[in-house]
Structure formats: C-alpha cells, structure tokens
Length: 90
Image (cartoon, rainbow, N blue to C red; front, side, top):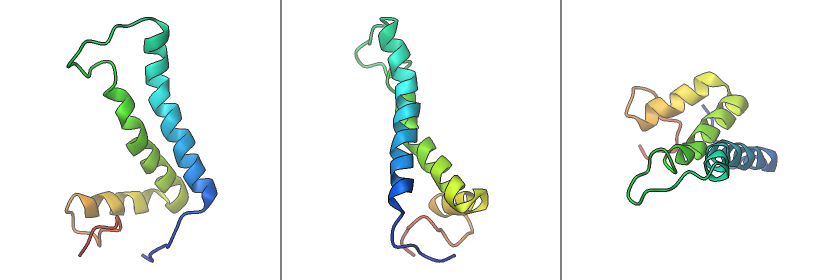
C-alpha cells in the first residue's frame, strides 16, 4: 500500500455530499412530521444522523480504493493484523 498525500477535490466534495445526504435524510422527515425532541434522549432523533459521516467515509473510500482497501483500513484501526492503512501511528 502506498501513502497518498491528498485526495482530489472531487472526492472531498463527494464525501460532503454523501455525508449530508445520509444525515439529513434522517433529520428532515422527523422535522417535517413534527416529531418532538426529548431532552437527554438521542434516539430516534439525532443519533442516527450522526452515522452519516462515517458511512460516507466508508463509501467514498470503497469507491476510490476498492472494498479490500476499506477492510484493510478498518482492520488497522481496530487492531487487526493488517498494516493499518488508516493513518494510525506504528
């Protein structure tokens, strides 16, 4: 695996579009139907929308580098036996 110094602007923009689309796809229907937000309770209001950025990161990484690279990255972050392609210090 080779290290890349930066992602193309199109990939960064794709990440933001996908992250916002996933997050807002959960929040807008709740707001449009008038669901109340209970203080101190994250479900079903804002917690599912917080998943948007991580799902977007996985999707864009899988699209750019391929599925196996995504698996390698996550194994490294989770302490698996790969070389850790996720930027984790050795």
